[in-house]
Structure formats: structure tokens, C-alpha cells
Image (tube, rainbow, N blue to C red; front, side):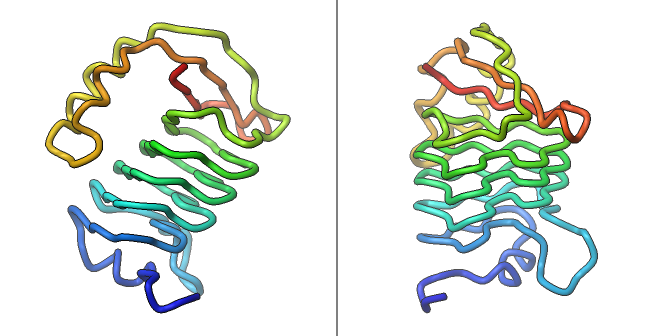
Length: 166
């Protein structure tokens, strides 16, 4: 990786907020460690992230103002990940639980996700208003609560959800 990338080990040092211009493997587990995944309460990325953002995420919230790479929220165990830009291929692969909130349809979803239709999810109003203090996320509540919702990954009990604003 190039020098402008923030390594995951730096993210573990900041329990509340970590702002970065570009992050590689944001909040994924550290290589050579047991399955810890992302554990702080919240992280903010002011730009694009690399592949596997939120890999094995266990709790907390990640806000990505740019694009997310391939395998975004792969093997997610729980938590909330919000992507304002595009998400790459195989988004949500092996996702157990949690919410991946997208502003655009993903490039591709695994075949083990089911289209659950269009819904008014009122909890989105509360969730997005909680981001009002964050640059780039302050007007998210204006998008409303109407989303296209996918449920899955059925290969992992299917308790994860991917709502996409339309």
C-alpha cells in the first residue's frame, strides 16, 4: 500500500472517532490476531476506503463519506456501516447480522441475499439524525426513510440487512 493509507493498527488506538482521508481495510481485524474485528463505538472516513471495509465488524458505527471497495461489510457480525458513495463487488458477503446502509445500489450482491421490497423504515429517521454533527452526513435525514431492502446472507442465517435509498 502507498504511504497515504492509514493502517488498521492506528485505528485501534482511537476508541471514539478516527478521521482519515483514505483508509485501507477500514475497521477490519488486524492480521495475525484472533477474530476481534471493529470494536470502538464509531469511526468516520472522510473519503474512499479500500477493500473489506468493516470486515468482521462486531459493533459500533462506521460512516464512509466516499466509496467503499470490494467486499464491503464482508463477514460482518453486527453493527452499522453507512456508505454515501458506491460500494464494490460482493458487498455483504457472509454477513451474519448488522446493517449496511447505502446511498446507491451496490455493484453486485451475493446470490444469497433476498430482495425484500421497498419499505418505509422509520428507524432511519432516528439513525440519520444522530449523524447531524458529522460533516457530509448532516443532511442524511432529508433523504427520508423509503428504501429498497435486501436481507441475507442466507448462507449465514440471513439476519443482516442492506437498505438502499432510492
